[in-house]
Length: 213
Image 1 (tube, helix red, strand yellow):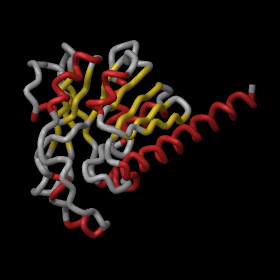
Image 2 (cartoon, one colour):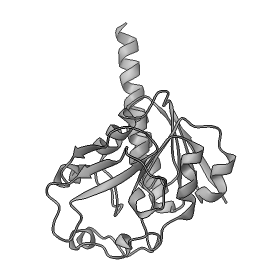
Image 3 (cartoon, helix red, strand yellow):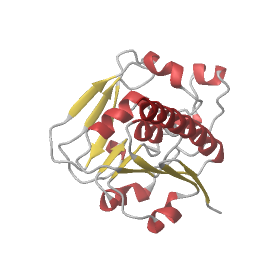
Image 4 (spheres, one colour):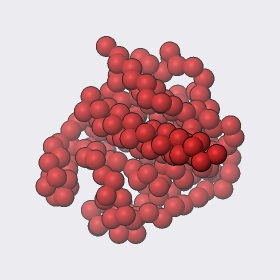
């Protein structure tokens, strides 16, 4: 059963994106971080275990539907190097200067854009205050950077592997509409709360601006 929640500019679905994607309206862009199939979620780090993270199986294998996302909309797909996507020169890189030896020093995102490759430097420690318990949570700064670099128009952003909702938070904070899909209920609930908080802050800012005019 698919559960839909509407929060301001965001429409969120708890369910399998394979069932939901064919029912969606046209979107302007897809920005997502799907499972890579590397089993990272099944092997929590020492710090993740101390925070209560348990082994999970959703990252045990790549998800074939990722290959069809560029047909839906212009796309940024983190972990795209783990999928057989078309050649692209518009790769994005997240450089992590403080990554431990047990982790990659950078992560790659495939894009459907014919443009120069770009890199953003964001330390892991810089993102610690925003962590909410998802084992592969991306930094908010990184997802904002992705959205900033989208071709115009990019008013409606889709993330079919929403996780804890970072792409949605970035979209709302940047004044974009957002559709997010997540099949794991516990992460869906976290995403709803984060996006609701982001929408509330956006509404407060608008109300404040309006009252001052």
